Length: 381
Image 1 (cartoon, rainbow, N blue to C red):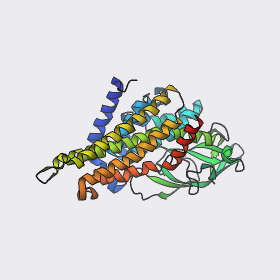
Image 2: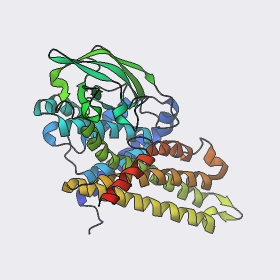
Image 3: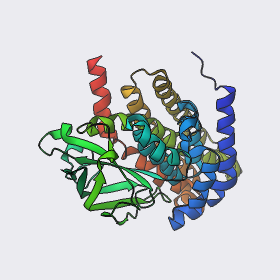
Image 4: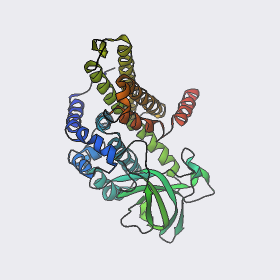
């Protein structure tokens, strides 16, 4: 078993890390404070090929393997948790829906501009009464001639207010349960009836707009349907499964940022005649933080490896996302503790890491849902 990175993977990681250190880290506090979508940074990431990392070159992507994609997203998240979500929702959710389930014409028309970074993507699944309980969604898509009329609303949609392409889930057969859900491609600027109700004021994840959407007699032509009617629920599960690897990567990136900041502070902060890094209590915190980070990264790469090989990875993706999510919060919490009173202020970034980390335990499968998923896989083995 080889735990090392290939030369190409190292180069990708180093290239993204350099960009993050030069362009994102200096802006991270401003992004958090202003909570504005940093379009210029997204454009720069597009120029570097980061908005289409895992997609084939024929569709405008960089054709990177999932290890490289996870490494790249981890580095972006190290600089800004919000930008990590922007990229993850754009690639892992909206982009992967089109790549996995779109026909050739749909891929060329909608996936290519996403992969090239000319367009921004969003994934509209959750509703006020249908978060973890997807079949409880109330948005409908009724057949009307050569198309569909959509009515309803979605909540907590990352990139929802800035997206050029939205993959939308709605019930085409309300009486068929999860087999009555279908997915569609929506173009907000072109499709009348697409309404952005507003964006959420969140604890963290700033810079990534989380929108509430409404659909008022939104007409979609038949060629916007992804796959066949009734495929939507299975498509969503498969897409979220792959997306969990990248949320694990977001967790790894935030945890790494918190650890690095805590270690640096510990060597610089003098108390009782020397740096606090000389105290065993601080050393034990640093040791535990790094051990958790290393374990989370290994789980992330294990799931990515299975995905690359085309082998089942439901349990492994759930484990990677669950563990990385929880340790990112734990590591950020310890980073605050090491900073003491300073850690509770915005003079240092560790409080931002804590706020950004918490979201990992909620979106794309709560920790509770993931434990259910893991248990079912273990009991079925």
